[in-house]
Image (cartoon, rainbow, N blue to C red; front, side, top):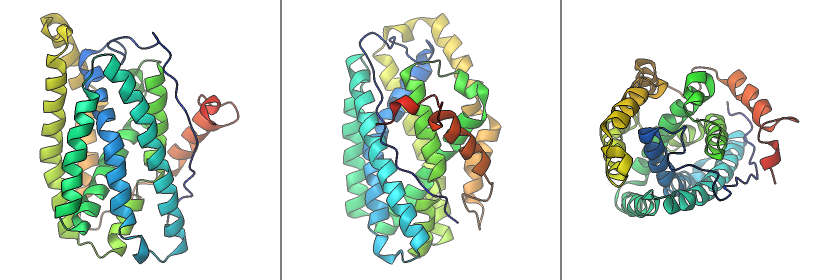
Length: 278
């Protein structure tokens, strides 16, 4: 069963001088890793939309049709807002434009040359990956503490909420389209191996352009912080690998109360991001 997915018209602001060079609470690695992830999102979201929309004619159940519309609207907004952030990060010295270009080239080739059902399987796997990170962020105060209190924290909390809201949409469309458990599971296995390696390599390349990387004390301190963060815990890896269980569904663990709590915290009458709504 799909929850109602609301498309929020939001806008985030990055006034001159509001972000330090290492904007994620001064942490070297986290600042570069978040920049890399943000650079992936715009083209990634467009790929997700194309992959789901390709099978939209096969979706006949009204509730899932409504969920696809909500999913599409949210992903369009995510791409737009992350492009704005990426431009700001580029001006601060992060290679976001180059990463966006590489992601666009790779995903366009996947969509053109691979079976469209594979693109949908990849979308469902990536949606699980991002939802796992999103729900870790929403559940764990230590994860939120890593982000500090800048506008980047705000955009990531908003994005995390909406990823959790629509995490089952691509998965359900994949099932409607006749996707097999074998393709679904092997797509995730390949993503875990290749995706994590790509993230680490891109982060390392980005860091090589940063003079702070060559300060051994700062680098070691940052490695220790990231390695012991909730995003590199055994619990997080188990959450990712749960996708590989035969019969898995994203809603097997009910996060309704978590989503409802953060909807109120962020966009309720006195929500932290209520003033970001257009």
